[in-house]
Image (cartoon, rainbow, N blue to C red; front, side, top):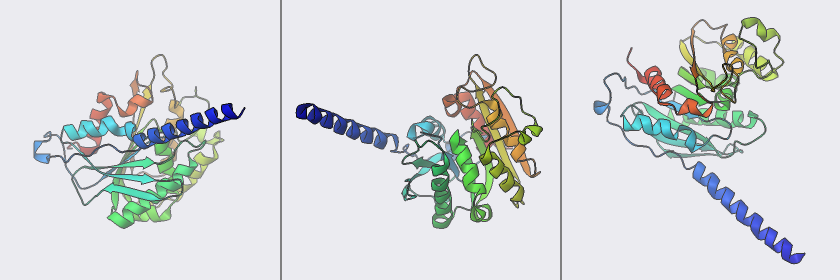
Length: 287
């Protein structure tokens, strides 16, 4: 019995070490590379507005690895900073932002495997406030995948400080759910708001109505359809993302665009070249 316990103890210890090493690898951050705007495509506009990259549930370095390398290799955008946030809201930073052109800031959660996305809402809010206060970021673009977008919506709309201090420019949501109680088979129409039983959605709706928005914002809602289905990307049904249209009804200064990519799974939304080119055009393309 003692011998078995000893073996199990060593085994569990080894597994724990392996898990920690794996997590450390997944959170190392994508390497940044300085770009040369003079060598970039003529179709690209370079600005000092940084873009925050927010991963979804269980998301890590890998989420935006391909995206970052794709833009850096083409001298379109550059990763300048990684921001890690712990479950206790402790923030660590690598790199710096001082107005570099087309800067990318990668946000990573030390632990985002909880049963709910709510813990990450508070963590992300701390990151946004930290970047605003310590780096003077007063305007930002957002690229968010899956629950990362849900967390961003709740973090931003739940903070009067951020609504006044951090101006949003362009927001790209990739398979982001905002309402999770309606049937997966329902096509979108506005009256569905009255049938929603998702209290988080109704909280967002109330906050959106109170938002004193006095400037234009562009929101791009990009979704995928897995092969054999026209209603879901395999993880997030379209209706869960399309209900975003109901949330922004009260703000005429928000321009909303929506596109569904066929034969595209949930994880492919941040990797497919076709979508990366679309994101490039949205974020940095000349008018």
